Image (tube, rainbow, N blue to C red; front, side):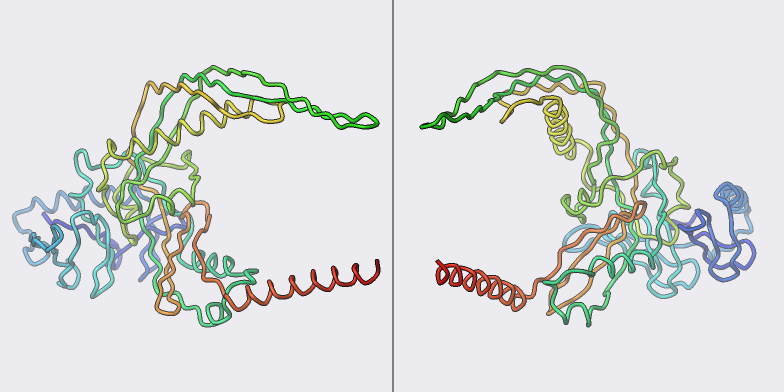
Length: 359
């Protein structure tokens, strides 16, 4: 059996992929569309044929592991063109560099490696590119050359591995609060500050607190494109990966747990603090938060990653492949900054000089 999986169109034999707009599998050659359930039936038929002793050995992809300087690399032979596909140890879905056909590495999602859930892509590549253009609009400090000469260097649709943590929390929070009262008499102004000890206790539940399980993705970037709508998550099927890149996790759920726990604890404090009102200041002094009934799920979430080059520096942007939330840092035109600063300074100087002359 082949170590990589390509979904072939039953009508024309072309490589098919998941279409985010249709939420179906679609052949880019003959435009035939397939429901995932239909495709699964075809897969079952293919498995039956694979047991036939007349199996054509030329169509079986061969695999071989090669040890690189920084880890394990794997090579596969494309079923369609015979080209060599080189991946790292965490790659689960990619494309052939020669014919461009999407391929999936099923072994990366077997046994304990199989995700529980997947949120399919809702937005396509063109929408990601349009979001970048919208992101650049109205940025007065953006260098003109970056805007006019900007060329997208790379756009990748990636299913990023995430651990989803669900838990109940019992919490007790103690805060120091103040009330400040000010009043005047004919000769004096008085300020009275009263101090209070405020306590809150109760329970709160968390569902699907995400922590990305990929070292390739920065935690800050992945958290910036949240939230995802988890009610749209479906049981994992390999067919959703066709046409996209995907990695299996290389950061364990135990390693990510600390980050998820911290997010739940911070959210608990904020939620309980929101119930306190009527004070001038209120700061948490002591917190006791106990998480219980914890559950961890493994999911693949859709992310569009875009990169562009400006003055020999690469700028990376990310878009939530489900909701379209877009983030990314931009360069700043120092000349424009100084012009604005100079204009403001000149206006203030003229105003002060004019008031001084009048009075």
